[in-house]
Image 1 (cartoon, helix red, strand yellow):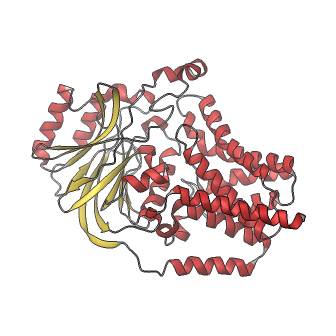
Image 2 (cartoon, helix red, strand yellow; image 1 turned 90 degrees about the vertical axis):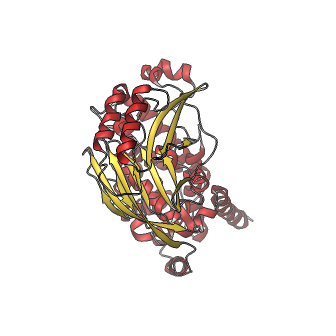
Image 3 (cartoon, rainbow, N blue to C red; image 1 turned 60 degrees about the horizontal axis):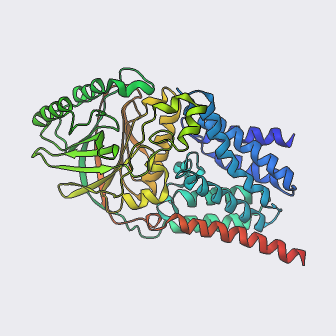
Length: 463
């Protein structure tokens, strides 16, 4: 019966994520997991944690098998669930140290998933789900801190430790009244283009010229804006080497007379590059090369094994990673772009956006069809906007293209799969949030200290 409840709790946790966004389930599911683990032995803890995690990830990550079948999807879910075996090492007791140990363990599991293996895959973190109730504390503790706070609050409710819970809530409230280090700097008008593709699926980029022309056609050159943004893969024809792509973008720039940020696939002597190129009317360029490549999507780890198991792996061409972050200048402002899944890594987000007045997330969701992937990615982007205290434009080939304010709230968005333009006035900012100054190493230490305090408590009790 306990395992059945663990499965139901894991399934229910999906409701905290997009497109459902029912944030209270985050507290409920973690509280229930804590309750189920109380006073259990090693074998029982392993069974409960595995049942919880597998049921959660099999549903959450179903989108990963949209066009490649069940094996990659199930493999990814099993890999992510495997981290929860760490709970087998932690004896959870009915006291404050048990709550701290549980929250610390959950925090470390999320951080490890974000980093390992192959650079990590931090999808499905509790810190992505609490924007509505806790948006004011994201700038202070970030996504990782929100996970820790959510887990410890859920545990204290189960233990009925109201005094400790009141203390934590008081600390959270107090943090939000400290003077903000973020200053409103100005306004910038942006046109985001959702050009669409002819057909969803892995083969969208075989129609690269058509996708490029769709984005050209969808760009409203009559609007008076400061910047036009296209999504990732809007030009899979190398716009500097392919004569057709270069000619058509040049013609657009003559009519547009505004800076244009293009998501492009380029080639150099080492191979393919996933880039963002800022074209200016006078002809100069600024280029950013994606640093954090997606394993199994943009390069193939363990290629010989992967191709034997999943024939579609042969279609994955290895990209080359960039090595530098780039700030794009725009009049008196500057902005940084994160390409697709780069928004998953706390440290890359923190480092690559340093000094930006506003943020951009360029992505291509066509390869995931009508699944929940796009909605979940928008939720992640919202948590980053709140964490960094910056307005953000997310722009996708097929959606969701949206304007997020500095609290992570969606101000405007285009309907998914609808070709069109989104015109937004973004507030620009200067200064840094406390969360943007803290690397993941800090939260690794907090998690280790929490588990250490739990271990010390057990040692003292055994004496």
